[in-house]
Length: 212
Image 1 (cartoon, one colour):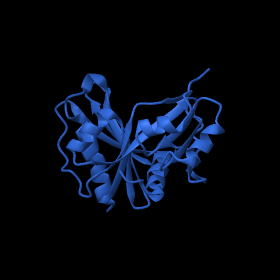
Image 2 (cartoon, one colour):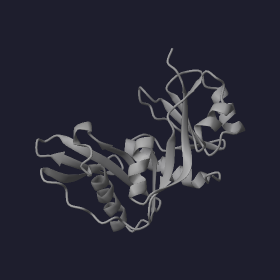
Image 3 (cartoon, helix red, strand yellow):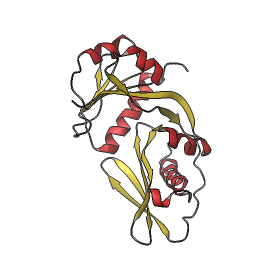
Image 4 (cartoon, rainbow, N blue to C red):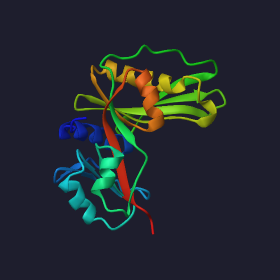
């Protein structure tokens, strides 16, 4: 796959930051840096490729909980870094269809709840027991809809709730007149999103140092 444009990465990363309520990304050489400031993730550096800029950045990192994110296959990131760096499970940068999916009704016993949090529109699917069954969020920024944290509770899976969340988020983007939709998926999430018409535009890999 071709190298992803840095402007696209910046759109996704800005949306991710707004969704999580952390500072906006700043330029860092040929990539970006986000001061996440969370116990399990202090900072993240994001690059379009695993070239010299990423390697030079890695040389300056000696502490855990600082992540490198890059739009390459895990094998390419492994080759670019010394052996003491851990390469995490692969991810996928994906783009969604420009037209919204038709919104299905929730199954019996479930209802959709919408709210705002940080810079995101949040969709929750609540069970009649008041347990949250599924959730997700979308940030509308710079003419782009960035989808984030799409999750279904284990005990409520295989009931179409993930698709329902995506459709509800899609409708929010559609109402705002936004055509570009982006997300970073896990291996498990990729299959769901592809069924909904999303496509992979780049692999997405992560590296970090192990805690002492």
